[in-house]
Length: 436
Image (cartoon, rainbow, N blue to C red):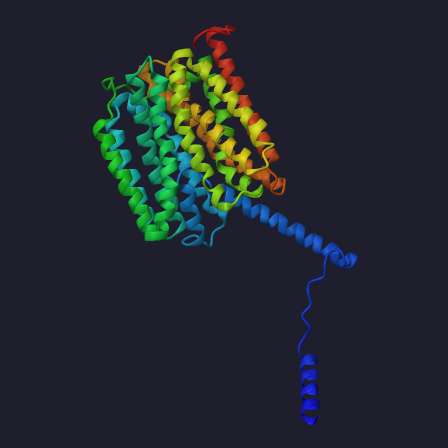
């Protein structure tokens, strides 16, 4: 009995010394002051979550860039914010297009050979330097500037050379060429993700660089222009004068408006899907679906355009893309409609990539196709640089709601579609059945 009493006293003392662990009070039974505090905390947490999710959305891209940025933010550049790191892919897109007039002029004067050699070296060298980079400025210089300028020097002569060889089936030829980037958009994200896990970031970058080196060697050996180089003096008027032509100006302005909204679904669809209940594993395949279907979207409309008219096809596909954003993406709330949107939108929006340079070639002197196509891409590079931050700000202001972003996307694309109609009208008037 004495022993039992001593044990009971010891347990009582231990209970007094040990603080009682209680479940947190339920919001339904807590005091009004506590409920208000919790509500404020929950609201602040929701805002922070929305901002974090927004930053994740900025990381998404249609190639393997998103994989690299995610790695940067958790490894070499973990002390930097997502918005600071996002300047690396933003610079890549901007530098890819802004040099268009210069590289186009060089192509018109010297042909594709020197541009391809210079671009191949810069692109591969930039990726190799990125593989050994550790500081923010090193990634900006290597991947954001050096590698992207090299890619730009490869892209423009390849595209312009295709235009010199085709007249009847020019849109289809541009489509087949552009389909290569969609195929890369399917392969590179998966490849980079696996390589980073298996061999580390450095060798993942080097494998990508070696693969690109092999492809650029093939390009240097095979890409040729039908036209012989024709040295001409440089003149700033060559870049400005085309904008004085109404059809050219309208095509460029239409492309600027359409491009402003076109890539926002690519950048935000993963986050939107996850916010609406799609699993992370399934949502990561949305970009692969977009790019895979875009292969057909870049080729089949080109084949049709060569038969029924390139402006006609561009008007139809641009309005179709706008309608898909507003009529399918905006109200979609489940896995099936979001996946269907990814597939249909990948097809419809893919037509723009192949048809835009075909429209420029149709209304241009073939001997100036390089500088005129480059001028168009230089203009739309501004839309590519600022479109994503604007879209992200719309999501932030709505605390993670995407409706304003989706409406903005659809309206910008409708504006571009209407301007394509105006460009067509400037060529043939109001004839509805004209092949143009």
